[in-house]
Amino acid sequence: MGIEDAPGLLPLASISLTHVQFDPSDPLGMFMAYASLAPIAILVSYGTLVAFRRDLATCLMLTGQLVNEGVNFVAKKVVKQARPTAVMAEFPTLACAHTEYLGNGYGMPSSHSQFVAFFAVYASIYAIRKLHFTSSIWKALIHSSVTSMAGLVAFSRYTIPRSFVSPLPSPSTPSPTHLTRVVVGLACGTAFAVVWYELCTRVLIPSIDLGHPLARWLLLRDTSRIPNVLVFEYDKAVEEVRRLDRDGTSSAPAGRRKRR
Image 1 (cartoon, rainbow, N blue to C red):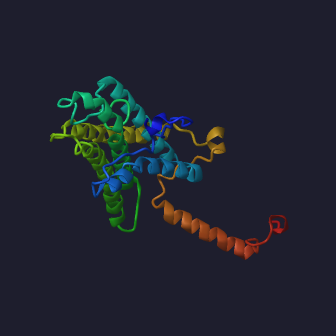
Image 2 (image 1 turned 135 degrees about the vertical axis):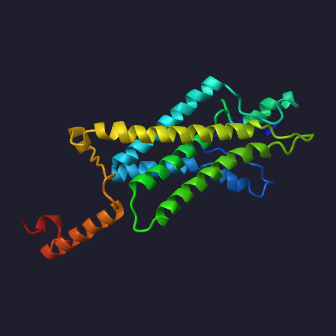
Image 3 (image 1 turned 90 degrees about the vertical axis):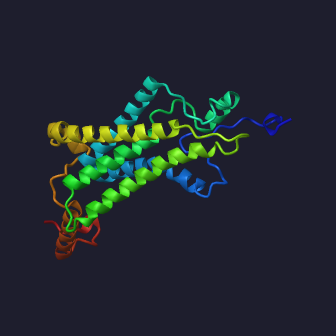
């Protein structure tokens, strides 16, 4: 009797969102597994920025990221290509068990690859066209960082499924479908990022009224025309602190501050 059949034990399930399996014999297996979780960290960063900055550009980028996920979901339903395994043709009886390691649902195009491609391309375009720094090296640093991250995640989605081929009883050449779904995902994410950026720049941002009561209640703001937001906010903060120091109100309780 197996442990799963033991009396008194209930079958457990895992959260597929963060459930990543890898080959422990692969020296890079754990690193690639953590790399594949990058989209979750990106979504947390989105939420933090939207909650604390309320910048219109960030809100629209997050909206585009979610729409991009919707496009990927629809594309998978249209293509209906099962998550690839290298053993489907050679070992039909192992195909189902093998696919189970790679998750349920369809695999074309790769959602991870499409996600990070959208993020990297949109962030790069925005940094190059909208952000202004005293040195151009910062734009190159942003572009290289997000591109490297996207490439690492995409590579992890190619290597992790392939690692499950090694324990098979006979040699098998990894299916090119692994690479195809990753490449298609990168292409879809890149194309949609360009389209969404142009849509935001030409249509959405000009048509959104930040003077609307709802926008004012949500504290939405558009800082895209400010050359360097970081320097601007720093200067304003220093200026306000100096004013409070001059008025003697910086450390006084709210009820005891001098009336202006």
